[in-house]
Structure formats: structure tokens, C-alpha cells
Length: 156
Image 1 (spheres, rainbow, N blue to C red):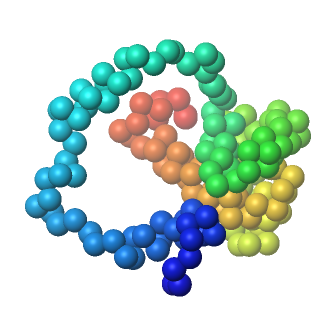
Image 2 (spheres, rainbow, N blue to C red; image 1 turned 90 degrees about the vertical axis):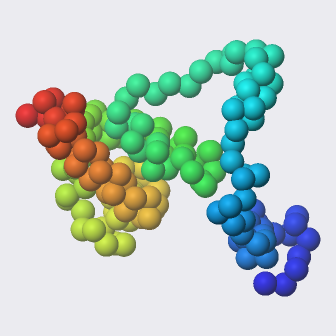
């Protein structure tokens, strides 16, 4: 990769370039270990900060799951608009993980099916996010139905 000024590289490209050119520390390098003194230093610095003026809390499970899938590396406007679309058009029909699983099952698990699913859920053609939503949903279902899960008794 040619050397470019940092401001001309996208952040992820800059990180990739840095990783390739930076030597990795050895396992014996103790300078990278977080010590109790480090923790105390951060805690002391934080004690002087005021409490957050507001807090964000989404108490709806399905909305949280969908936001987890959407809300990374997308523009905030896209995420907000997609979630507003879901709430206005699909929220009353998709209230549980079982409801979401039933909707996922109606669409083929390929690019065309995931695109149709994304348009159905969010009004956007975010097919890769729909695919990721399938993975997140199946992990939740797998966890919730396992005998070790405290959620197991609520899914009968």
C-alpha cells in the first residue's frame, strides 16, 4: 500500500496499514498488561466527571436486536430512519423472537432473499445486515432454548 497522508485514508485503511507495518509485541512484553495502578488512575480521573445528563435506554427486545444489527458503521440517519420504518410498519407484528424467526423463515437465506427481508423490515436494501440479523436471531434462539439458560422456562 503506498504511503498516503493520514487524512486521505479511510480510518479502517489506516488501521490496516498500521497493523501491517507495526511489529507485534511478544507474549513476554509486560508493558501491555493493565495493572491495578492503571485501573486506579483511570478511576481517579473519572471521579471528577459529572454524571450523564441523559441516558438512552431501549427496553424493547426486538428493537434492541435490530439496532444491534444496524447500528455500526452506518450513518446515524440511516439507522434512525430504518428503525422508525420498522416501528411504524412492522413493530405490531414482530414482538418476540418467535415472531422475528417466523418472518426470517419466509425469506430465502441468499442475497435476493435477504434484500427482500431488509426492505420488509427496514425499507432499505441492507441485505448484509439482514443476513447478520439471522445470525444474531439464531444465537438468541439457541441460547434461550438451552437447558442452561434462565430464559428456557419462558419459551414453552
